[in-house]
Image 1 (cartoon, rainbow, N blue to C red):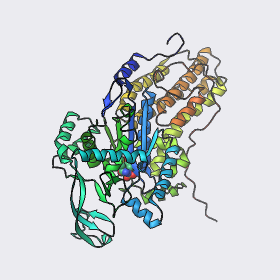
Image 2 (tube, rainbow, N blue to C red):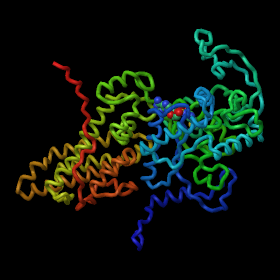
Image 3 (cartoon, rainbow, N blue to C red):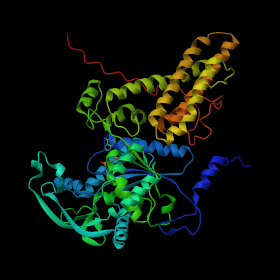
Image 4 (cartoon, helix red, strand yellow):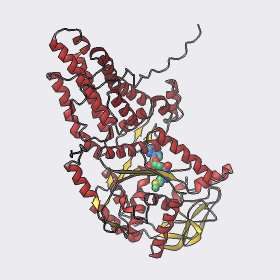
Amino acid sequence: MDAAGRLLPTASAHARLARRATSGTLDGFAHRGLPFMKQFYLTTAIDYANGSPHIGHAYEKVLADAIARVQRLRGESVHFLTGLDEHGTKVQQAARAQGVEPQAICDQIAAEFQVLLKTLHISNDDYIRTTEPRHQQVVKTVLQKLYDQGDIYLGEYRGYYSARQEQFLLEKDKVDGKWPEIFGDVSEIVEPNYFFRLGRHQDWLREFLTQNPDWIFPAYRQKQVVEFLKEPVNELCISRPRDRLSWGISLPFDENYVTYVWFDALVNYISAVGYGTAQFGERWPADLHVIGKDILVPPHAVYWPIMLHAAGLPLPKRLLVHGWWLSGGKKESKSDIEKAKALGLKHDSPLDLIARFGPDAFRYFLLREMVIGQDADFTTEQFVARYNSELANDFGNSLARLLNMGSRYSGGLVPAPTIAEEPERALRTAWEEFAPTIYPLCDEYQFHSLLDRLNAFVKALNRYLETRAPWKLAKSADPVDQARTATSLAFLAEGVRLTAVVLAPVMPEISARVLALLGQPPIEKWDGQLTWGTRLTGATLGEKIILFPKFEAEKPAETAK
Ligand code: MSP
């Protein structure tokens, strides 16, 4: 602390600041030699504007949000971006079918996604839409640069085209050697188009991956990319003739074409942070792109690094690739909807559970259930089971007991712990074995494991209470028993506080509510807050409240006798 009582940066914070203060020139934009602070820049995929949000979209945002919050809690300045991918054939077709402008469809879908972000407490700092001028300009600048330096050329695209579906087909679209009926007449056509020379940079990308084996997390995903790159990559067709697709960004060097939607969409990561301005280097390169497994190869692991490399820009530092929510092998299953209805829950989609159980319980489930990188099954039964056992019975119960006994035995205040016997030592040890794993688990995005271990600690907290049984001790006039009663309340309060502190990135609203019930402000920084202590002594406890009412399946209506 300095003389004015302000907290001074710790040694590790100093080291971090020094590491991040770079006098950089990025992409030729000099910063007049002044040092600038690089923010932790985190992105998600930008969602297609051709449908309403579903659980996959929600999960990716929640995962990225938890990572952003962990970074902030650890003292980093964070810039968190998400957004909407608005161009392309599907939006154009949907607009025609509904007789409206494509922009109208995008506006409606953007509003739906933004409501979901708010509902789920997603703390994004920006939302990019690919129809915004700030994005379109950057796409054009990048295209022009690549064209001028010979990375883009005019060639011939040859392929099978379905006029009815307005799309090119691949051999793999055939069923039993024939084009399925839905494609109508399919003809082979040859048309001039623009191509991006991916092949030129393939050796460089292979070398980059060899030098950076941890670029993609989990590591086995990087191996898939290396496998993909063993074969020569095709040059990428980055244009679509305007007479077929008008809903896109015009090529700056040929107005008769619009930009292929992936080339357009990937650029969002740099257009949103001011590519071409002096501020760009404060954010780019991104520290982490969070994406699903379906869009790694080739878009994020081949097109994007090559586009950046060709444009002379540094690559994102890491890609985090998550798995998919499946249910019975499908994205969302009908049988789950039926089961949910049998439990008395309105459930047309997993997102309906948010309204019934609250956004934080939903966030908790997504992060608790999915082993990062793998697929997971979403079932309402499993949701309810976890909610009832881990939130209602374990955490909810420890809080309810604290508030209840606090008002009965200690005048609504947290007493001072005065003794340390075996039960206290065991509980502290449970915490002290868990605490050092928190940062490493977060560094590897292992939220399922973090929450599993946290739940084990909460169970230890409830066991401690059973051992101490303050509801019995409080009846004794023996001063030692009174000291044990007071101590057990103090230990319970400290255990609940630490749980709320760890939960802050996962359940931000619940964490703040629990801390308020302990007379504490919401947690802003983790430093110094994750150690067992006595800071709650004398704090005023809040009114009794059931934070997670236990869910009971509705009883089937009684049949008339
Ligand atoms: N618009 C492209 C991304 C462009 S990024 C420059 C796109 N959009 S999407 O709406 O189809 O998917 C957005 C994200 O949601 C992707 O990362 C995708 O993997 C993820 N998910 C879509 N369905 C999913 C599940 N069922 N489960 C988990 N995530 C999944 O791809």
